[in-house]
Structures are given as structure tokens and as C-alpha cells.
Amino acid sequence: MTNRFPHILPADAKVWTRFLELHGKDFSHFDYDIRVGLGTDPGDIVEQKYRDMAITLSQRRIDAVGYSDNRIYIIEITQRAGIKALGQLVAYPALYRETFASENTVFPLLVCSSFKSDAESAFISAKIPYIVVDV
Image (cartoon, rainbow, N blue to C red; front, side, top):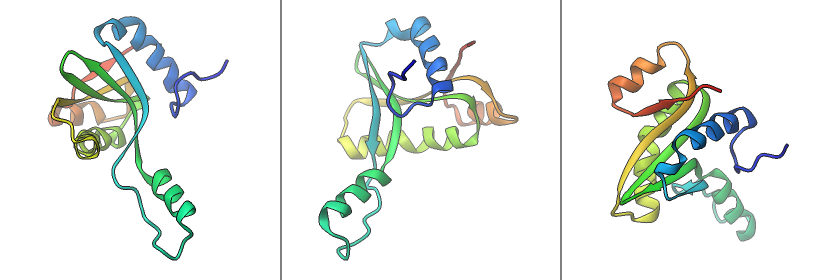
């Protein structure tokens, strides 16, 4: 079975597929593997085509962006959520707004099937919404 969601690991794709079954109807559509941020420029000592490639490859990538009414959801998808996912969901909405000059309201959203120890309380404290699905 091939993974139909770019950049999403197979175990995470199972979580996402279950989320879509339960909540997909709440969104008009999704975009996947969205690059945000500036990336890292190796400088002009590198040939331009490789320089461009290095910048593109070093940009941050959002798992999914969901669209619902005038809201944009920056979605991090993971089987077992930890502090890394929290950091991504703090940073990615800001990077999305900067990259796309979006005037729409941008919301973070975690989709997972479980949490690593102490991570759920950190999400609650940071007021980052999440949806836990059984897979």
C-alpha cells in the first residue's frame, strides 16, 4: 500500500486516515507538505541551482493545512505526540502567515493517537487544541 499523503509517515498516515473518516467533512479541503520559512541559504559559493535546492530542502514543512470557512488550520499529524509537535504548532502558524502573507485567521491543531509522557499537559497549558483518534 502506498502512502497517499506526501511527507507523512505510514504510521502517522493511519492516524490521519482515521481523522479524515471522523472529521474530514468539517473541512472544504486540505493541502499537504507545505513549505514555510526561509530555509538555509548556503551562500553564493554554491552554484545557484544547488543553492536553490538547499534552501527548498531546509524549509520547514507543515504536514497538512486544512481549510474551513475563513479559517486555516495548521495540522501536525503524529502517532504519539511529544514536545517536538508542540514546538511545531507554536512556530508553524507564524511561519505560514509570513510565508503566504495570509490575512485569514490561522489556528494550530494536533492530530494524534496518543501522547508521550507529560506532553498532553503541555498542550493544555499552551492552549494548543488537539484531537486524539483511535487507530
